[in-house]
Image (cartoon, rainbow, N blue to C red; front, side, top):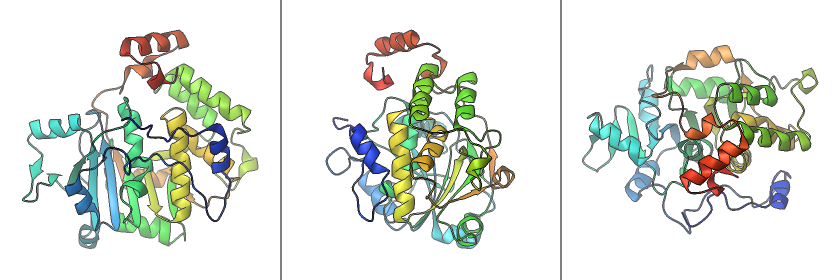
Length: 327
């Protein structure tokens, strides 16, 4: 893309974006008005009627499609089930002969309406996956309620019951599970480095910025907040102005730093002075809503193996661009 998808947000604009005001303009990673379309017109027409949405994403063939189960008749009727994917993944679905095309040229894999995303803004599949995950309200502006599940997950609970349990019963507009193991962002960052989940020097830079900007490790002083780290594979949202704002701020941090979105969640809460209302539910409940499947392969890119800054610079040089790796 010729346009920077994140909008080239300045440090001053970043600071001002965290000020809660009745009216404000902020960056929110979207260039469809002036740039290439991310979703084809025929698919835009289909999703224009989707008020209730279950969405997932598969990029660079990193996961296999998993069909939702235990979906009620009413949920079948009122929910759209959308799978966003890149061209490589859609081609694999076709070659595997489990992609079906309907009379309106819509692509389907079982319950999922497959939408191929065009003109993806990043060179990393992991970053491209954050576009639908965090910006569903931008891609589907007519949607009122959404449930996002990562591509590695299988939805095993009725989506209507999920909305009732985690939004309506709790009188909330945003719900996400507590992480199984970590409460501190810095613990999660160390785990990402140990498990080779992203380039170590970039994670270190990311955390150094947050330390200097005052993000403290989670402690009981932060109660009733149970954790700074969510289990980001499942996000339940009502698309209100406040949840949309939070999603934009969260995306801006992911765009600026590493695509490990769990590292940025707690920071955005911190910068909003913990005034963002949401429901963080126990991890044991998360495991009753989704089933975890293995990725097709262990790592999504060579970046995840990088241990030192000089290795990162060599990789960027070999790939032909230093900018795209943040060096």
